[in-house]
Length: 181
Image: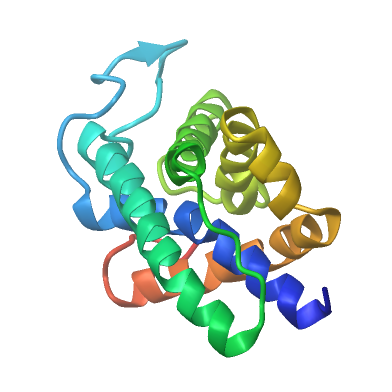
């Protein structure tokens, strides 16, 4: 697999994990997951982590994976790039893991005294990736091993922080986020 194909496969395979947090921002609002509870004098997660946002994020990622499955044969025929098709377990594990990673990062931010929206370099950019990959490894280990080769993982770790900053910057400019990170 050449570098171009590796990048395409990495982005294709991670799209269902990249979309959930953006969908959650758009769907935001509703009851916070932590119900307003505190721990050690600080909110457990904060108002930014809601049941509706989490459900919409997971659903958006799973629907996107289904759409990608439908598109894969067409793209493969026209480009000769071997794109992975998502098994059902991966269709849900990638977006659910992404949302869990974002929730875990919120928990860590609260424990370290950071307010909602405060920057936390690397954690902000890679939390959802780590959890999406771990949950997918557990849910669909054979598929994970076939798709997430070392070169693909390297591309994901390098490209994701850049994509994260760009998409959050756009959301900030559109007034969908209060901060550009």
